[in-house]
Image 1 (cartoon, rainbow, N blue to C red):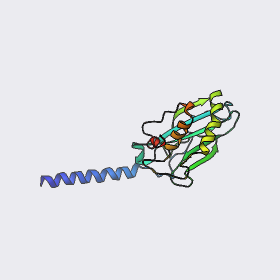
Image 2 (tube, rainbow, N blue to C red):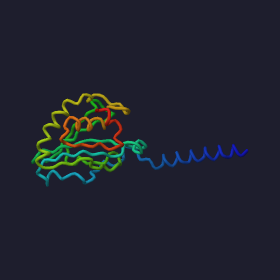
Image 3 (cartoon, helix red, strand yellow):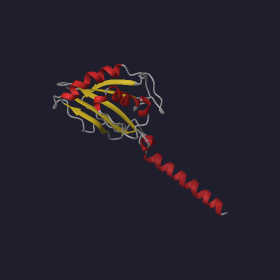
Image 4 (cartoon, rainbow, N blue to C red):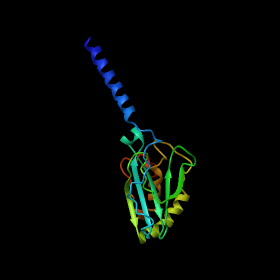
Length: 178
């Protein structure tokens, strides 16, 4: 009898926990993609900028991992070029221009993992653009062990060591670039 009570308690606790998780989980279509306001405004900053970002991965994956991406803005440019790898379209490597490269990653606020401005950024942007074109897994995405969204910035950092990029511990897949 006592064993049944323990089993019932565990079952109902698990069911309640999953129900609560389902009630509080936001849908990816309505999750925030607003700018975080941490990137230099390209209309106010004329110098070159390089930014690497990481934000918690969507949903429960964010408990364990981050999604990372990079953005460059050459001197006097009024937009950033963002480079990122995603797993839901081909090619996996995407490039787009925007004045807000620091958008929330489906509800998760990004953090800067590297930020360079000025002359050093101006010198490194052509190198970054060159190696992005050579990324060997541009058409591939594998959640684990990689290549994935964290493999790409890590690979760029390996190819352009002058960046001094240090990927976060939770950047699962960054080691695939080694």
